[in-house]
Amino acid sequence: MPQILEKRELAPRTHYFRVKVPLIARHAQPGQFIILRVHERGERIPLTIADSDRQSGTITLIVQEIGATTRQLAMLRTGDEIRDILGPLGTPSEIEKFGTVVLLGGGFGIAAIHPIAKALRNADNTIVSIIGARTRDLIIMEDEMRAASHDLVIMTDDGSYGRKGLVIEPLKEMIESGRRVDRVVAIGPLPMMRAVAELTRPYGIKTVASLNPVMVDGTGMCGGCRVAVGDSTKFACVDGPEFDAHLVDFNELSARTQMYRDFEKTHMCRIEERLQQLESAQGVAGQ
Image 1 (cartoon, rainbow, N blue to C red):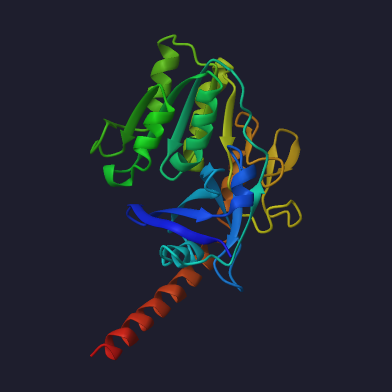
Image 2 (tube, rainbow, N blue to C red):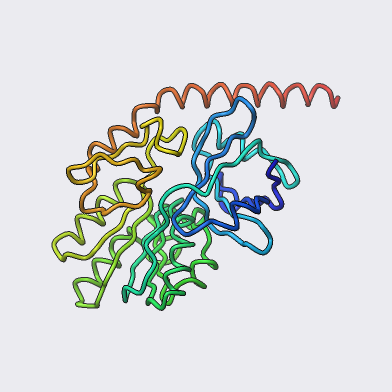
């Protein structure tokens, strides 16, 4: 089974995992993802491949505790094993020489833009990366993004680090100043990606958004990750996860992401109750 070679905390409830999976590491490309299960009866969840190393046979996963399964995954430690990992999945990012590419990563989306930024820079593009989060503590992979970019702009909602404001603001300034922008890649919360698409639409700047709707099998069979793109229905797991942001129906996508929120909250409460019971039992045993 895949073994965790390194695990550490990047930010509150956000964790770095380096996992030994040689076959996946050998074939992984920017923009792709994996699906994993923590245990035999566990839920299948998609996670972006934030980095890969063919020589060491490892991939990097950045895990944010937002649900029951990611909470369980966060409890694992260096040396532990993950039940199974499937991948690499999804259509790789389009990597070629475009010119000046602006990449925007909001919160957890920073992990997803990292391998894309690296590959685009290696393809001789000028890389401007704009990353942001609510506060300084939630900014992740700053060093990695700085190494992958020619220019790096950091934004925080509260102004505790970098510039105060939203990631879309520096992009707007670039466009309005007349600076050349040949391509934009946005990965983060849906409202952020929608705002980026609306900003670049009037200027005709090619804009790509990476979508992460509800996904079960990751191979196009379940249909759970379907999204409306232009006049077509696409599946994020096989047709994406990256799509032309100007064609994505963000209203429908937003509605679909809300479908299982109540169920997830209930399941998360059960997990927390079990953890409390376990901690109480351990406390009694230690007395």
